[in-house]
Image (cartoon, rainbow, N blue to C red; front, side):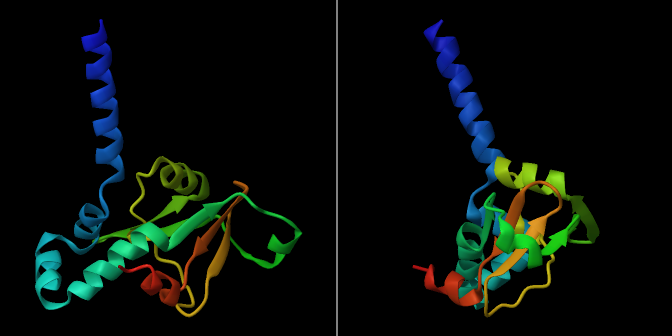
Length: 141
């Protein structure tokens, strides 16, 4: 019985890790393997930036309050994977983000790179914070 429980635990953990993907695998997913290899050789700093953006560039918070009324509300989130441009509903976005299965590099939002950007995500009760480039760069080790 303990063996079966251990096996189930190992399977569950491996599924969680495969869904979330490492920052490296999500960068490969975003760039494509050929472009990733080229960029790794020609501009490794960009790879480090994209990895930092994955880890530190996006935050989802449920701290909506009276100060949130002036923020832009997004009913749908533009999302692009290679040639498949599309949108995610606000509920799908929040669920995927919280589950760790969303590759945030595919999000296509207009954002000021010099400041943090805040978006109310539909009527979900969440705010998406897109961090500034300077903040992301400060996180690169």
